[in-house]
Length: 311
Picture 1 (cartoon, rainbow, N blue to C red):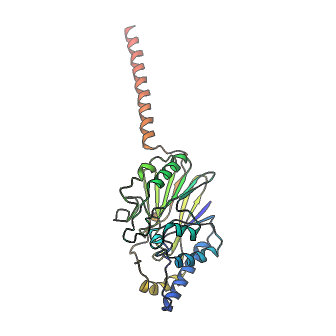
Picture 2: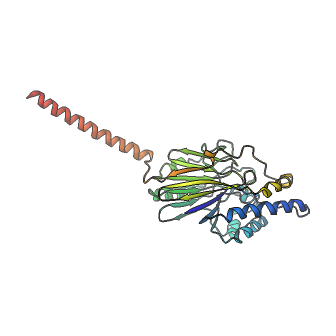
Picture 3: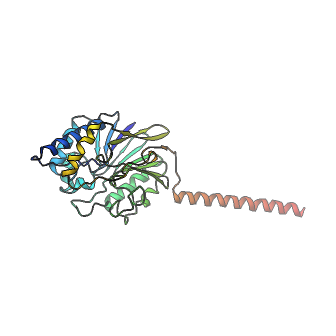
């Protein structure tokens, strides 16, 4: 199975009286989405901030482009997508739930909603208790099946920029309490910080994509029987860069990120599909049992040795 992933797109409204801005915006996004949606994949996923403010017109216009390709498209909500409308209204326009999971024969896809609602001042991530309980249940029920999680915000202190204020899911939320329960392979994809990054922690691989206005690229995650191979696909179309001066001159709520492009090892990786990964509790239990067996064996050997000594 092949999954195409795109980072923060930030499709935005443009002042119709500024013709050069409108033309630059339309040319950039139609071309960017054409390359992304024309790639060979089974699923196409936006990791959030598909829009810049989440207005009705932004969502309508960008979805008109997306729907013209007739792809299986999934939109993870980003903080910019939820700035101007209640989530219920966004769901009506997108036709998608805020969070859900898809169980396949050999793996599980989990789509999280890490956004607040209509809070322009706090762009950090948040999950309420209901969603956390649901996510924990999904992880527990996944068993050893490889699990791929798609979210907008990174987990605190994982990928580059996740240590910044409002740069991750709120640090007060203990995501590791849930993630550590995973047996087998776990991969977490996110956007938000606008910097390419790949990190591995506690058996999980965290893969972060930069914003499309900074890096004209997307990722292909190919799932085989033995691994998940993530490849970066750079779009070399020079007409994309030609539109940026006008876009950056007028666009609000976005600024270019220096050094957004990571090194090759921060953009591509291969993750082996493990049949089982010990979580911390299981590991300690197994080690304790093993030590107990060794102690019993040593004790038995001593007794046998002692008996022989007395013969």
